[in-house]
Image 1 (cartoon, rainbow, N blue to C red):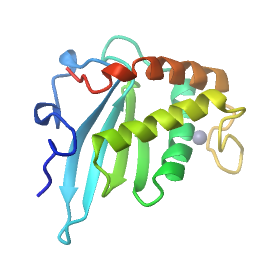
Image 2 (image 1 turned 180 degrees about the vertical axis):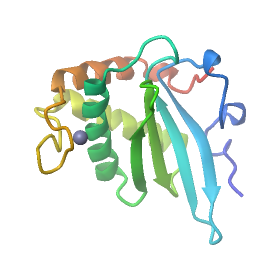
Image 3 (image 1 turned 60 degrees about the vertical axis):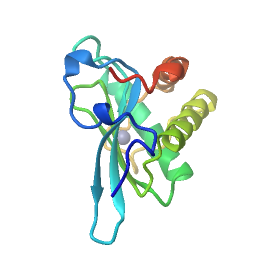
Length: 159
Ligand SMILES: [Zn+2]
């Protein structure tokens, strides 16, 4: 049994919510899946924009995705499974193994965003490691990181 409240999540906001109510940027637990031996896979939404208002460009999303991929691998090597784009272009899906603590996840997210501000290039933006390596912008990723960091006091305010 996983007690999502003990992990720092507001139980009412776990799962799928009416997208008209969502505030952003926010960090929210989407689901947790417990395996037969007690291991848990957590799906976390890193919502950047309010749904159906404004959208991230493909370049912004792509460079941000590379940074999130690098950062979660670096800071949570035992736990990180994957990061994926929301097709609606308003955020990202983060999948973690045995790490569902809201404070820890937000702390790592903040570190990654601060690293983006100091970065001199987008990671993996080369022909060997990326399927659209010309479609990147460090400046866009940094502007986005700055905006999300400024909203940190509200990350846990989902609705
Ligand atoms: Zn890529």
